Length: 317
Image (cartoon, rainbow, N blue to C red; front, side):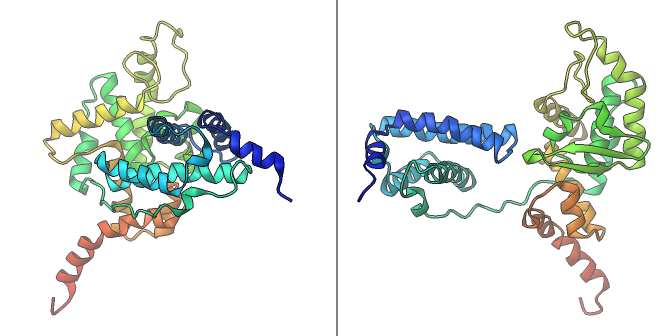
């Protein structure tokens, strides 16, 4: 005998109800999955865009959203000229939401399971060659507070390979200069320890001794109280966007034409480590990658190095 209550729920569940279930889904991602705020923000954006599409298509009930409709949405995304990677991410967000609805017994069958899997484009990331990286590290002028801060930022990036979101969220208490270590809160709120080389340690130490204290004086709202390690010119926590501008300014100053971002320095860290013979698992741990397949992209970047070594050393090369 069919579950009468269950049948009624499916029949009356509207798209508006689905939006309410979406709020439950976000709570689930925050509490159970422990995803980072940035990741959750992307999920929200992707799924809200899907809701907008369902409204324009005048879909009122959840049972109208089937695999055929989802494939039409996929076609719509392609007409919007999104990259394959972006479309893949948006479809992945929808799959996650419908899987949640199925898990919570809101739907009997997950229509998103029939959407074709899109292979993401594998783009090799931009990175700096060793000489370019060393030039960037020496680029800041150390005669002012912001120059010493920029120097500390670049040295920290290159010493640890951390993400820009991880860098801006560093607190003074996360830094252990004596043992040359930093405690980092990464994606999914996973904590890891990264290492500081001597140059990074010295640069942070010099920044902390005077420059940071001087920057704090510029913050009139909080009376110069902040736990954040890196501050902006107003004495407040430096934002990711601010770090990107700092990197772009120094890259332009050096006359480097290729597009370089804070993430490019992370790529440079990994590539240079592997070029020097570092173990892939060790680099994975330092980068905070959950899966080694994510780290393996950097092995493609080192193939040119292998070819160079081969041509120099093999008798018949």
